[in-house]
Image (cartoon, rainbow, N blue to C red; front, side, top):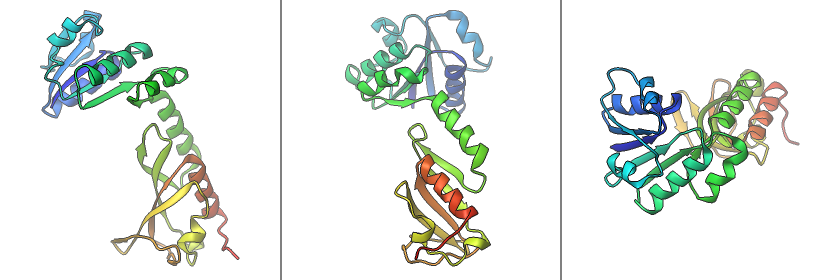
Length: 220
């Protein structure tokens, strides 16, 4: 993959190096030449000093052949404009931008860009880890608005049906694994201790599951 990383801060440098280690052709752009010092000495991608809004700089970085671009500077407006330019003018199929300040997330959304907000995502993950020991997130979509959770069914919940276990609009059962065999869950399926259930849920849905595990009750 031919990838361009715009912004060589800590995030950009880490991303560029990870892609390089995976064998991809990486080109990184930053206005400040000294920012490239954040990259490990064995990084052999392309360095491009200059303004990412300058088309000559982008061409030098290889944007006309790029298959993927990530704009990860700490300037939300710059990330949005570069991302939009990559999509609309250069038709790059895979564009991802960083949302640095959650207050300006609407800028990226207005352009219809794929975005990652490390601050929002990190805060939610920490919140979950602080009080969701029984319900473990294994996959996160978007910026964590919806996640896939794994729940080991405890003895106190044995005998509940899937519908009784997942009794909130904020949670959808995905699968139940029993004795190593995964199956699509039927709402009337009776759960056993030791089953592993995966669900897609919001944070509210995960909290409802945690409450159900702590105080299981059957529907009347």
